[in-house]
Image: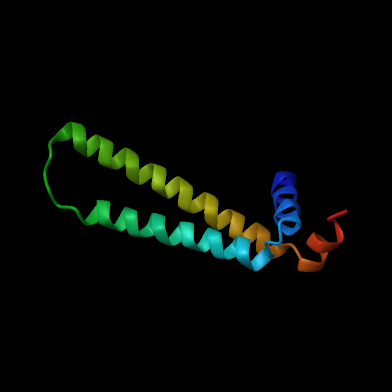
Length: 88
């Protein structure tokens, strides 16, 4: 995940901190979870074609949630000092 470290370095160059990047990811996780819960809790029957679309949307949201959580775990594993020291 070298590109993540590069992104973090560029974020530091633009005055974003590690905690700000994490905050942004947590916000995206929250939005995706709310959207998925809304979709799952919608009990309207729109027929098989829209049910298939609903399931596709749920799979996509699950993918994004796993991706964002993976990024959070990876970023949390990088010491702040390593990000700051590698800026040059």
